[in-house]
Image (cartoon, rainbow over all chains, first blue to last red; front, side, top):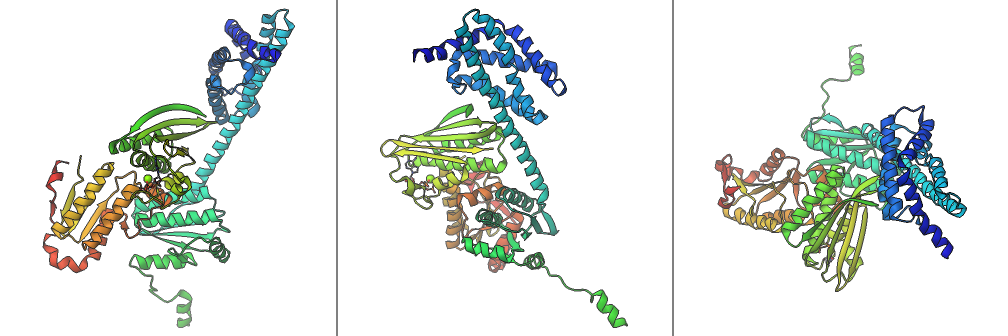
Length: 303
Length: 134
Length: 141
Ligand SMILES: Nc1ncnc2c1ncn2[C@@H]1O[C@H](COP(=O)(O)OP(=O)(O)OP(=O)(O)O)[C@@H](O)[C@H]1O
Ligand SMILES: [Mg+2]
């Protein structure tokens, strides 16, 4: 009991002291260690790296001085350190660093820090092993944290790219004056339906269109959530004062919708985009009429 | 989760409710929420602030810009020392009201946010916390 | 500001809400409109909310009440300019504004009102194109 508490309590102070006393020397040694790994990258300047490293050391110093390291790096004393590492990992993820290059920022501090702890401990072997153990725990946790944030940031980059692609993949088309169509192709997940809904509503306002056709001919299946999103889209279009027609509902989808108990009672549906378009023309006071017999019929008459 | 910015506002009058809406909007803009997400959290805030005022007899709204593992958002806490809610499940049901409202406030606020937490005890008060992430 | 101005244009009343209303202001507008309709015998109300960035359940209820009251007083109400983000939020909130007619913009809203009140048109054609302030209290805006 007394033993573990000694390990927990004593070392934050000694690590903090080493960080304090040997700071500029430690900084140089650490930067040398980092440059070895990052040399072929060049996306980060020596000045920037130095500034980042210096800031991290000073935050680390503050954190270790405030709280014992043995209790982990999760407490409020570590917020600034973690915040800094989160920003660093995020920017490195965006700049195209690999996860290990990002984690190296923290891990490469081990060797220079350990050698200074060794010097500070002198002949006290117990103190040294405690210090190294605690410093290892601390840096491992922080290093893993950078990887975690890195991972999340990459996921964000990917989902943003997906979102951009979604916007491109669901173009709102003006079929006629006052008639818009949104042909959806492929699987409709809820984020995609949401993006589509927003751009459709926006275009309705911009163009002052009275009718919007939501064509789902190219959609293989819908689940409850998607069906509800479609319904919400229709409701939102109505609220704004325009009509909404859903076209191209495949038989299986019709069955699913009924099966799921989604109420499409008030929704105008048409089996094909052509039918929906004809209805939209009607709704806006227009009609398509044939102005001449089709070309092949004419050819037959002439013969 | 780290709190980047925090502001506590009184909810004691209808003007305060307007002020809360406007401050929530500026928090949401600063946190980079999309226009639709801004509108959702401001609307939810309006519902909850009105509940604090009308049902809770007034209280406070705490606005926080938060970040958690790289995602950012707006967290709002509405707190009062009013009569509390006797039957929380019923209060959450759309259409249930003890006043003259539509009874859409609590359920609506939940649907308009990503995280929703309601604490209430009769005679002690009510606290609702919602978060909308970017 | 303690009142939203109500304009009269022939047989129609026009209200354009430009501020974030507190609840009492919304209730005042509701009452003022009812009074104006019966005073002027207007047959249509155009409610422009294109500047509103938020419509919560209270404002939603005000809109429904205005439409309902107007109908009883023999006037049609058309709400125009609901913003996309507001429409999406209203749907999520669970407010569908049943019984309220909506149009994309003022122009379409006016056309809708004219169509809905075509029967009254001849009777009241004279004043249709004159835009006049009918609420003295609101002139300060
Ligand atoms: N802060 C609060 N203190 C005490 N009771 C509350 C509080 N918030 C909500 N309630 C109770 O929960 C019920 C439901 O609230 P909700 O906001 O859903 O509807 P409402 O306020 O009655 O009507 P609306 O919000 O649609 O105008 C209220 O009628 C009230 O009884
Ligand atoms: Mg309420």
